Length: 248
Image 1 (cartoon, rainbow, N blue to C red):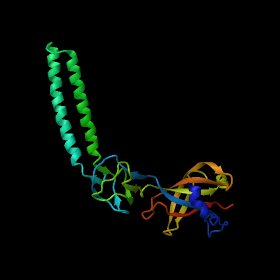
Image 2: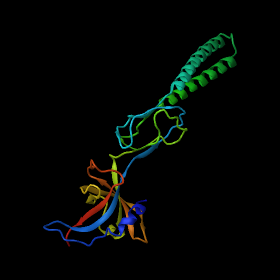
Image 3: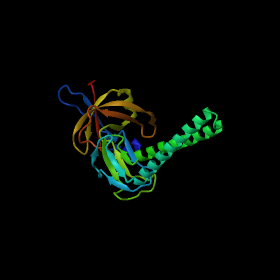
């Protein structure tokens, strides 16, 4: 994935070593990277109900546990009320059958059947309670809306995308580096990442390398983390990784 994204710009990325004034290290060159979110989700549901309200538009920010979408679940609410009433009736019947069985006024089989009916009714209540909880879809993490698919008052088909969200606060950098950099570049190495879209440079650190080297391009993938997440950085932005090495 990283190679597919960066291959178009990789050819122009290699710059010769250049001296920097004073005691600054030599810059190895400009190796390309893409900012990626650690969390992205397409929200769906198997609920069959009209949408009451979509609370966030495309590009808007939200916090974890905020309600993203709310459904009109009046029908499910009435079904739950009916199920709870049935469960209460089965509970009363089960207690009566158990008492009669203990006094030898009814058979043990009748008491077991009554208990089974109670178990079934209570399971139906639990299932409908879970269904009611799905009437409000909450954000699994803080982030922004990437795409709003459904609108107010629509009744989407079950399991179709409703909204796509992305975490723009937990970001990492996917890098594509020449494989010979493994001779001197190690996990924990620090560098500066120059973001093309903003022109700003931010400190980052190598987290780990990919499992294999591409023998054709002689490159290896690497993952890096920002020391501090830039406020205006967005997933999909690209840039140059500026690595320094001590003078020889």
